[in-house]
Image 1 (tube, helix red, strand yellow):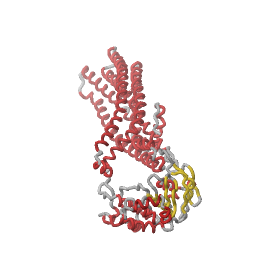
Image 2 (cartoon, helix red, strand yellow):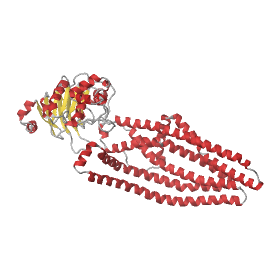
Image 3 (cartoon, one colour):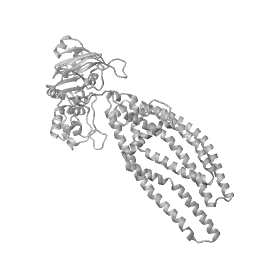
Image 4 (tube, helix red, strand yellow):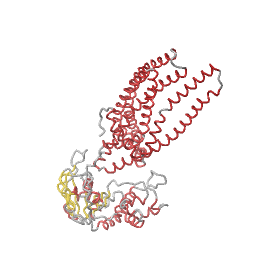
Length: 598
């Protein structure tokens, strides 16, 4: 995705067809209206030139025959009527175009977000996909603006056709020269459009870096370290380097554009000059009046402007098609993890088994899990401990089927996890990830996202908040559960890391599911409240199959069984007392941590 390849105008047609389909599907009435308005507008310039010629010829006749001002009544009335129609048209076209762009942009934006939401974790961890997703965000706005571009092209072609016919009627050589004069400009814009396509692709990774570095300065969380560690100048230096790289890419495009534009403009101008000389010969030979000289001269000049604009817009379609291509490619993505739609759900505490499970991340150099064999009895509470990088969080992700094993299989009640309806399976899982989400929304939503159906069940939400130890804090806010949290939006209340984690725990406590997967559930919580929360975790997990991952050994003590992972394999397993008696890896981890509490 995002590969560099040469592009022709013909190659842009699928993207344009897609955009047109989206436009007419999203706003059919507005689409028809803006097309009709565009066709009407295409004749305004020609009509204006004709009225101007009529006024000039009327003036000449008046001077020659001594006529009064009344002879100008008809041409001036036409001029006034034309101005009035143009004014009304401008208002209607602006309103229709804005509404059309808004409706289509909203529809396409929703499609892009919906597709992104449907992708699996493996896809979202791919940096190439992130480039395409970033371009897809821009593409919705670009694709929605396509009606304006295409209508301008249509207006230009219709006006050019009428202009060419009128010039042909006067002198076919003038019409031919006028058309030929645009060919160099058309060629240059097509060439520049192709170059622009390559430059846009090359800029994607650097643009994402620029956005990321800029976000570091805007985030209150990262701003803390930047200030204390004195990282401002260093990060600004990196930001400047990225800007320089983007500028160099753009400079190459600007240089080529200037050279090509100068050369083609010189050729085109010469052809237009010859066409104007032929028109001037017409009045010298007595074939046309002064007004007609003005009319045909203005047609030649208008044709030059029309052809240059058509050529420019044609080149612009390359950039539009590039972005729309990215949008279409995102819509065409399919998740690597798929499942049958059987509506099967976990109804009771399941038996879970890992059989020879190995897994390696796409960017990894070694297996995160290597031939893992592990089983959980129904209703068993299993604590997973080990050093960083031992594979603990990877085990949780595989159990949630965010990834599929490279080798081996995971069984739930004897059925391969790949054979289960994942949406039904997830409804039976209570999950707290290590990197839990801080939803900068209301406290009510932060808790209720554990079970959206309970959004208006205030009593259940407060019970869950009470179990996680955050109820008092929530009730202290002026708006209680309706308080917006975080600092991103006006009126938001910031929480400490531990308070955010207790909110995340509330989501798990709200969710009465037969399978629990909790990754570092108390990592940000102080020891004073940890004991209380451990009691709630014990109560919550009673009668359920639970996998609890932690560096905090207190959690291991409340589990029915402890498994120690080391380099993606089971190094030790047993109860706390059994593992302490072994005086192995677990004993070392426990005593190393316990000495600081002694």
